[in-house]
Image (cartoon, rainbow, N blue to C red; front, side):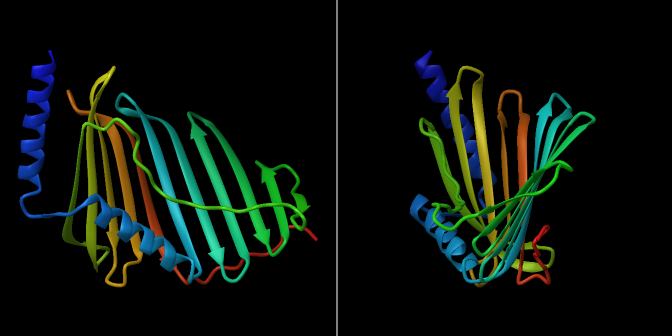
Length: 215
């Protein structure tokens, strides 16, 4: 059984390597350093990100989550999450302006909070679960809506109770190293079944305004 599993991984890796024939293999350190540098560059700009995550149930979408995150320097931030399951939709909103925080669920009244004297913070990043049997990192030239880009890709394959699963993550960076787009797809390999797909787009220095919803 162990020998058969190893053979399957070798075959899958050979197929993946052939598919990446036009790409350049890179190290895990190069992949994560590029992502870390892009996150650092974001801290120096105002930006808007839009992410949509679909969870599949067979051939239909069982759940869809949309996240809009806006950051306006020096100290304004807005976050909107919309979740849809069937015909049911829920919304969660968050606004921070300086030391004031505002929150509400759906169309309920806004609730404000003074953050002075409390610990607060936010962060973002990406990680990879432990126990992956095979991981490959690659880089290739690409474009996002006509903008030249570097596409960095991390493909992980592992064996679990459901069989062979994959975690395919791609990151597109512009010539300055800024994020243009990220995409992550997870599912099963035999047969290929896509379970979740997340796509995030980025916009820098957008003409956005973030105002307090209540006085």
